[in-house]
Length: 245
Image 1 (spheres, rainbow, N blue to C red):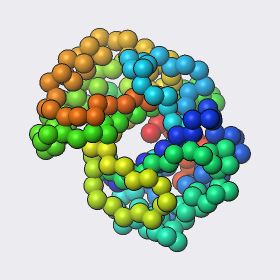
Image 2: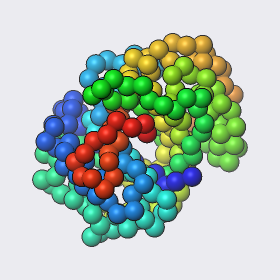
Image 3: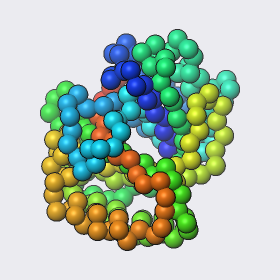
Image 4: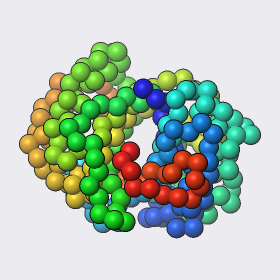
């Protein structure tokens, strides 16, 4: 397990973050101390068909950080921490009016049959982010059922390259962004948006829906976002790689 930190920028008047603004967080994030992995999320450039097309559009920008220890994450979230560089009013002009949310979580990785990305040169893999913002009547029973059943079905999606499930923890942050307390998040990774769309049309989706009907009682539903995923070369600011998340 690792510690994951998510931040999402939702800007209703901006479809995409500007290329200039994208370079700044890439440089800041890749230089964070004791960072294991940093991912940047942006919306697909074309419509990506999936089972939940009525969900809200993907966030304009987001990122995910992986650390081995909670204290390593909390060090970068201090009042004088290096991540404060992204919270300054002039940091991301194209996202100045965005709603920004943040959450730290425990990350659990689950096996897939073939984790090797098969992307064309210059292309980015596509992650499917699923958020559960509500509450379960019995959270222990909910997680126990989910972790014992759903990832095993996810593994049968054609072309799936990674599965991660995130659950809550207590954490300290002095970033001036809204703290959220979603009970769970998931991430599925595919080679590209078309591979995600193909997987959503496979028989596995019917099995997922049947298992969803067996979940212990909870409120708040879930939200699904397809996002292009860039993995930063940690320790080499402003360099973007195409590795799997």
